[in-house]
Length: 498
Image (cartoon, rainbow, N blue to C red):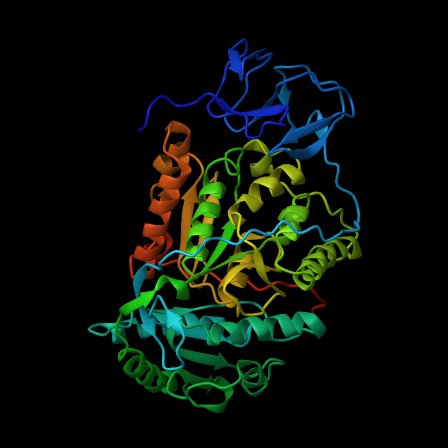
């Protein structure tokens, strides 16, 4: 605790809307930068109220940017939400490169205890992964995970996990390519000290096809088992897992520079405090890691709509700007090609938490990017190569986007939430709460609380603390979802199923 909780926040000097930081009663008198505001109705935590009269069709401003237009006149002190505000977003836009790029001053890198792989890559976990090529063998993969867990006892191998999915057959075109690419990315992920690729034999994305996507691999680290080719797949796997555990068990943690960390950033179950507490803390953390030479990846493209020009201005060069334009417009075209509007994004939970429009959500969501220049833009399934802030094409869906971050090379994912969620992805998934009530209520889900910002803890203090926590997790500390045994995976489905 750092003093009395604040009642509200006006985020930017240009704003004509403020956000309640706790439940406020009707009739509450507030002083907003010397201007008296009396609330005309009760305002729930995370929700907005008007700081001035806003006429019909007038612009509602938060984060210093438009988040929508008033569909009825809104009086000073009145609740601002979906009943009186609509989005300004429309179809495709024309963009101009207007760079506002500021490099971060480099600072000495910290260290963590990680695993240096034979190919020079770095992992923060030393696990055995069982990756099915097709959904038909999901149950066998799960049975293997359970049957062979005891083999890890007394070794440096930290877990054995299978990653079931319903794909790998009856797919066409880009949809099939997505599955093959993501599976190959996971095979190559350095958090896995050993990998068993488990196939059936008759699927479209069979082992021999998948090898073309995996590329060069270490035969001691990656083993293949095609179930139709053997009499007893469990008996064959028993031997292969022994070999993988023997190989992966030879790795030990050693000091490694934080400059080699790749951290994914995602939010879900957001509320009105997401863009005020947790997301800015993750953004400040991102800047601090990048200043040490590290890499962060921001995704969920539909939740950039309405805030994309801020990211475009931070693109290091015009080529990256054009890639970001393509990133945005490709997703807009994806929506319209399926006869869906491109601006209908906030979920019922988002709206209940105080998020009104997609612009409102996007401007809060992109706070996770901090202030660093954009150094790389990746298509879905591409792996991170350059250091610094990276943008990744993936939808907003929590499981799909987090899996995409892992597939692109993220060692862990920082997941901010105002509503709470228990899920995980193939890599450690740290849950960061926007409010302390959630952290207290769902202590079994939440790893890090940013709600203390409204009690006076500074952004700099919290982001330093988050950096320390990331290094601890990179050094082996389990996040809550890991301790619960959760390891989920989801692939972006885009096409026809045969």
